[in-house]
Image (cartoon, rainbow, N blue to C red; front, side, top):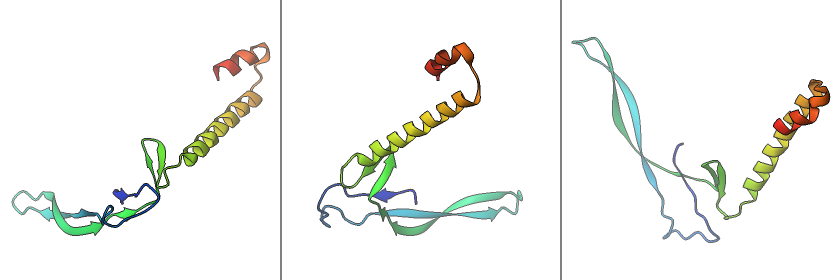
Amino acid sequence: QKCHKMHVGKKKVNEICPDLFVDDWKMEEVLEIDTEKIILKDEFDGLSEMDEVSEEKYLGDIVSSDGKNMKNVVARANRGTGIITQIMSILEEVCYGKYYFEVVKIL
């Protein structure tokens, strides 16, 4: 689903974090007899409860319910390791001769 809820903090109190609901809609195709065109019509399908998650990715960062930032640090370290591996494979595949260190600076 598109909508999630997350409690951030140690204790979860039901008065503070009530159940949240969102509208459900479905698309229905309607054929107009006069123009023989198919028109999409929205139809209300009731309410559904939001899923509760312990972590969510928001603007590229991982927000966790315990308030810690360790998952962001690990994700960024893994991304850096992957980029270094790509750079090293590029340098090993092609012989740059005396321009090796200039290429290293650029990459």
